[in-house]
Image (cartoon, rainbow, N blue to C red):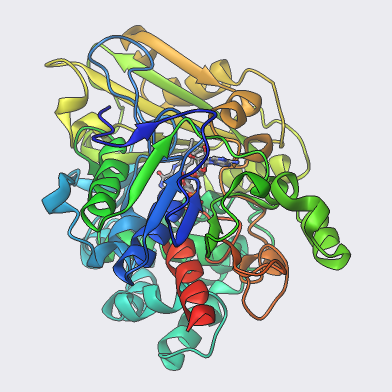
Length: 487
Ligand SMILES: Cc1cc2nc3c(=O)[nH]c(=O)nc-3n(C[C@H](O)[C@H](O)[C@H](O)COP(=O)(O)OP(=O)(O)OC[C@H]3O[C@@H](n4cnc5c(N)ncnc54)[C@H](O)[C@@H]3O)c2cc1C
């Protein structure tokens, strides 16, 4: 990957002529740097790894010519993001490409429930729940932009209270309760709980429904695209725009202590988790705040697989062939049981698997006629158990013959996920448990959650509201807090 005219200078001091320093180049770090540069600040962005992007990188993990996304691959939240979508990223090389349908959820009867762009066509596939699905989603989709604005933000007085209130009535419930009370059929129940399982919560706890609603809402309102050429292109386009604004990026600059950074540079915006902040500045933090960071809870981890495939995945349900994402967990009951097992600290025998076949939308990621596969399942935090067999058995269950298509494989357990990116503590890809108590107040309950007790030092990672995902809104809001304080 080209870093343009950026410098990679491990061990050298940061330049002193800079207003703002951002540590970490994940989507939130990049968004914070851009928002600060747009406000006229001179910005230096320091990244510990050799390449920028954090959870938005790509690499040839299996065989030459096969581009894989080790972390994020579906960029729906980038399209929903009230900040990222204002940026001229297409001019900086980003092309988001859509599969024929966002999602398929295969069932054991050989069919697949399809989440289509249109609410109407999705509802038509849900048998007895056609009307119920339309009634639940049509009003929300009609006000999707207002909802994204309200939800991808810290807790604050809502600008659109009526539609947020309508959303909240369903969202505060558990996904299992919402699915059982709104739907009578197996298809709609499986679809909703599969989407909610992205929360990495037990689907029987409050607010787990919110994740299912938001995911389906993004599918209808903006689609579930992938970045042509890999997610790295999204990070590269953000970096390119940052440079155009005068920003400066250095890779290979792992910061061990904030004392390494120029004292005059403010704000200092950190794309790190509470554990990262404790490492960078723990001894300087007042005790109550430090205690808050120490008490912060991380969620379950993931086991990740990437495959090089010598043909498309042979789904039993032909309609699944055109879906970008495929949820493999079978029935509502089975998905709920799998996520409950993980929440109890166990490894499910038949895990719920999130699979993306990016090459159905972006053939450029593999040689002609070949494909890539991306999948993970949830496991207890810190797990080192090899889940390859369990994940591949779930794919084989709905696509007999899948195993014969595998020509290359790359696996990461929780330890390796964290090695890839220190923000994924114990393999938690959301920067902390997304429970009711941590969703809007993360990492420590404060009027401005991005601020820290240290003057001019802010947090912007997914350990701040609105949590995990490639939306850059933690970065945007942290930058706004910093700019407000400097006025
Ligand atoms: C397997 C997997 C699949 C995912 N799938 C999706 C998906 O499909 N869609 C989606 O929206 N989200 C997905 N996510 C989540 C998404 O990637 C993250 O929520 C997002 O990247 C968080 O952005 P961030 O900027 O907060 O931090 P990160 O992207 O984690 O970036 C943090 C950066 O800071 C750097 N850093 C940390 N500490 C230091 C230090 N001390 N000095 C210098 N640099 C430092 C790190 O090296 C890293 O580059 C996935 C994540 C994983 C792991």
